[in-house]
Amino acid sequence: MRKSITSGLLVAAALGSLSVLSPVAVAATGTAEEASVATPAAASCVEVVRWYTDWPDKFVEVKNNCGSKACFSVTVAANRDPVFSIGAYRQQSFRYGGALWTSGTGIKNIGC
Image: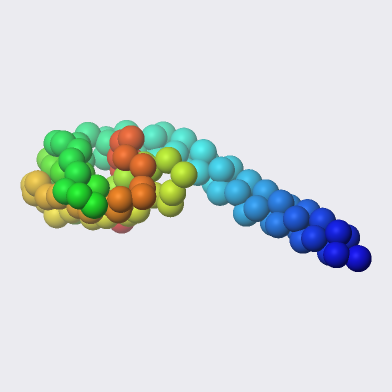
């Protein structure tokens, strides 16, 4: 009896994790393609100045070269991408993760 309950719980957990991860992967690829196609001019507005760590936090310093507010997200593997906004013609640092997060790999410009 215990083996059947345990195996049933394991199967349910495995199927639950697959159903949670699949839509995220599909949605992430669709939005990245849409962002790169829809706003190629916005990609030049926000640029990374430097990546750095002030233990235990991870930071990215960005610069906005446009005359209006710009929004962007930091690409972090295996985590939800945090979203930020920066004012016109500003350079600012943003905390995007803690000690257990992997380092960011880039930024994506998104609509505000």
